[in-house]
Image 1 (cartoon, rainbow, N blue to C red):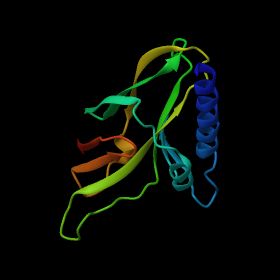
Image 2 (tube, one colour):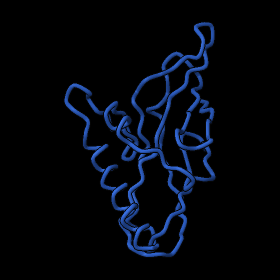
Image 3 (cartoon, rainbow, N blue to C red):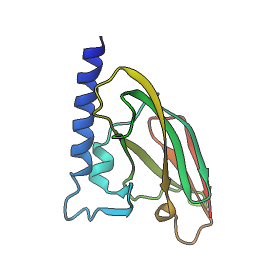
Image 4 (cartoon, rainbow, N blue to C red):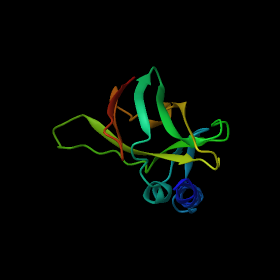
Length: 149
């Protein structure tokens, strides 16, 4: 069972690496912080992280969350926030802007210990001009947060 989990994790990680490197020149990927990527292709090709994300919150200009997974110590884990760059407005009369996000998570550690690690992302680049707030909908989770600035 543990061996199967490792191979499934490996396949998912390889898919995630492909997703981030898949931005083409026409898509004009933007890396607006070291771990926040705005790229339509990467967003479309990033799988939703299900069940492993918890304690999601916004503190100032930072999106923070914890990921729980099997690993050795989590030191080599990589997480990124990926957006397609679009801004959605539910109704024309509403001013509440929404950005859909996905969390890209890479874990190549081959250990069976379940560990948790907190990640923090500066999300200033996800602001929407002419607004004072934007709703962040993190796909694959139940989290939808209001980012006020």
